[in-house]
Amino acid sequence: MIFSTINYRIKTLSKRKNLYNNKKNVNKEIEDSNLIKKYFTIPYIQNISEKFKRIADKNNYKVAYRPINILTSVIKLGKDKLEKTESSQVVYKINCTNCDSTYVGQTKRKLGTRIKEYKVDIKKTKDTRSVVSDHQVKLGHNLDWENIQILNAELFFHKRLTSEMICIKRQINGMNKQTDTEKFPEYFPYFPLLNISYI
Image 1 (cartoon, helix red, strand yellow):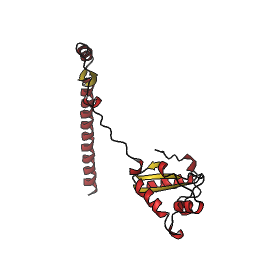
Image 2 (cartoon, helix red, strand yellow):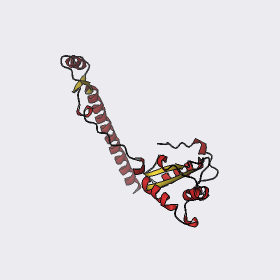
Image 3 (cartoon, one colour):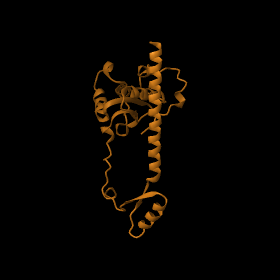
Image 4 (tube, one colour):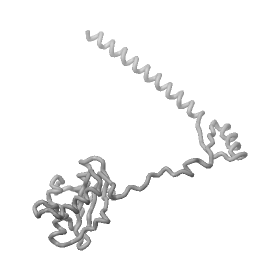
């Protein structure tokens, strides 16, 4: 049984080696053929572009021509810019117009929907109000609803939550509760190196 296993392994290894060598040879042939079939593209200008072809043929190159006027130069395919309130899955910051206090939050829904909730929230009782509404009621301040900043856009919830906690920590005078960053370690040696791309 031992010898038969050894023989089987030797045969298997030999086959693999042959396959590897064959594959190597095939790859070499492809590489060699690619050396002959190198292409470059130039705009087609009558009586001028043909001269490039003659030079390219001498050096084993193939020339491909393209038109000067293409459809994309006439028709723009860019999408309309998305309104800020239509943005979703974002980390945002709200500024107070009367002091330097700020609030950072995250939402998977449209930002406009979350803003409406904040505005309605101010009518609630003291115990059920959010910190944003509480700031307005207690101090009589107004929040800058028209200029809410989008700090980061992130599709995945846990990444977005981490981004939110980092942005909360970066605030100078934040309204956020302490519980908003309880999952973020108090001592985090790499915190100064973190760079959230503001968009």
